[in-house]
Length: 217
Image (tube, rainbow, N blue to C red; front, side):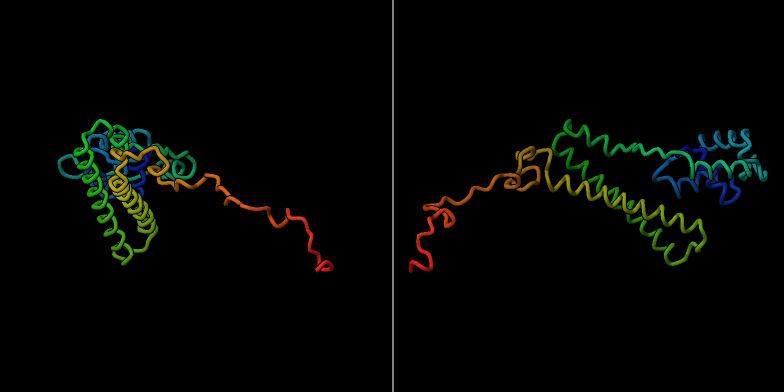
């Protein structure tokens, strides 16, 4: 996602100033795509220069509200439907996990606890928004429905990351002496091993000569 298309999507909801867009950006997209005020103002000017947005009104202290143009609406729709999605994840949580072997044990434990608390709080906050939308407090239009979809994704992602921290703490991967072994890897140590047949003390029934036939008894 680019800041440009995020702003166009918000402007498609209605005219807004740079300040309003920064606030709405933080409320709706801040968890997945944070943007600082200066960058938003710079990008708004570029959108206007490119004919994708235009000034809708002027307010006190030089305040300007922008609205999306037909070309801007076409561009954001093209981005949604045709442009390849960037699936790159830029998560400092995972980056730090990759280098956690450099932490002291107590530092690693504290890191997991902080991350767990953060993701649980984030999931709970998003769950509150979702419940209010389910009650109809935000209406039932397409924008509210789309936001509900995004909220559910955020809830599940944060729940999953909180679960990951709990798994890391419970399995004790960083200090377990069994790590890298069959038992430490969470696998049944008997899986894949050949099962030895019980030792036989005599010939099998199918190997014995058939000396006693019905006619011989």
